[in-house]
Image 1 (cartoon, rainbow, N blue to C red):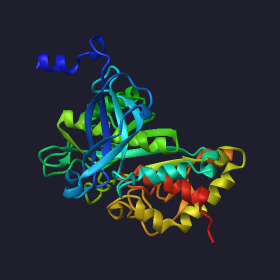
Image 2: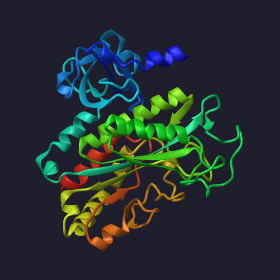
Image 3: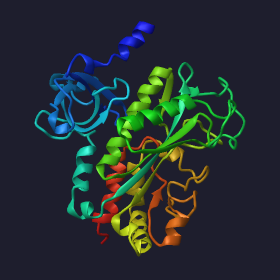
Image 4: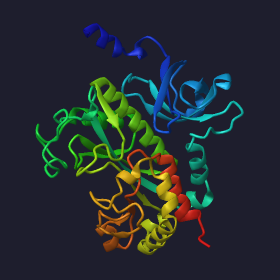
Length: 357
């Protein structure tokens, strides 16, 4: 084992210019991450310096066997916390050989929205709170829970400390540091209300880069749980009953919202979001109806309500924002398994480009 870890930690820069690039893309379910690596002749600082590549889409549910090639375009580069040195992780999106985005490529249309001049001018900031649950590998039951049984009721676990309250902290902390190493704008972590559930936050990041960062942060977490022999789930309600679900609360502000008089701009934006509540809900994650019940710090899925400091609202405005008359708001509706490309671009589109008739 010692030799194995020596080899894994070999510093290539002593002997070669070559680097390893791990290309990452989203598979056929829209949530499964896939990746494979290739050798690049030297260090790279921009995705445009990297070659496009391809994979067998018939094995990921993204192409038929008789025309199985899907082309991946490098879009964002991060330092690789696993291989270190000059090695990199590359977030990609997927196209047909003819250059058309495939149906699961949600980045392509998000990038279009984020490059619209009216959106660019408003410099949209996002902070995404990604909740997730760690499961015991053999039984698919939350980490630290007695197999087939339940821990004590919720209360002591949120931001809790201690062997009977916090399970999986080594994974969480490894992930935190690995994300900082990678160059992801991760802004914090905390234990969640349900034991075995945690959260990390990415942002504030601008436009499409918020989603690139969140996807790579998910990838890094998936790799760390793989090493730890623990299963990661983004299911919005992993345990039925009196347990909190898992969301991906999305904090949002524009230049106008951050400037004087911003609270009025925020109210108008929230009004527009209310008018398109159904469309947003249908794009905010699979199985979200199991989570948005009106209990456990959620608003009912069919109701749109907003309020200041209200955690049972669809949209929450912070006390600070109200007091200062400017700032940001939080969309509490997205599920933990949402696609950030879809959610962030939809919020921008509804609040900045859509004109209600």
